[in-house]
Image (cartoon, rainbow, N blue to C red; front, side, top):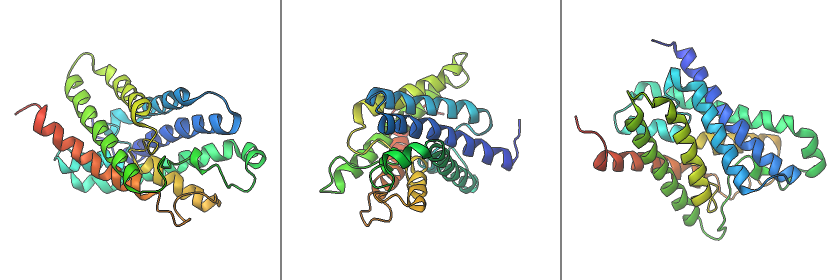
Length: 245
């Protein structure tokens, strides 16, 4: 079935928005209300990805990530001409998801952090090692390469298979696993729409520690790390496990 450009845009936007709704939402629950813990956070993000895939997969294949779209273009799995539409939709979806979470919890933000000095981490990722850019940058490259490699393995294993309905569960489990195993160094963003778009929202809203307008360049590690890591993971998959034509 053919879908219009508008439908493709909406699918990628809404799917990405769902990731941020549940991911930023679980971060807010933990930070503002001290409910749950790190395990809750990893599962919250995993559920957000699961629902985002369900919303968009039928129409676009559920990229939901500019780094994934770039990797698919680099490995000739996706046409370059369609990439700008997808990336714009993803970035807008990330922004809207963060905005909805903020306004949902706005009253609590005003009580917990009235000057918005300490809570930007609800929306975006920050490094564990603050004295050097490279540890967080390398963590994002490696985590995103793992993500992309595993996504392609999942897709190839499930495509045209009666068990194809399990693919969203597998990708969601992958997100949970990466979060549990590799999440501490820089928050396992692995997705510019998941990190930069909410960070832009926090900058617009006046969050002091946003990592974008405070001169720290924290934003660069998850953005450039993921944009390097995803194509790297896809290329490694093609060199090792990809089905040969």
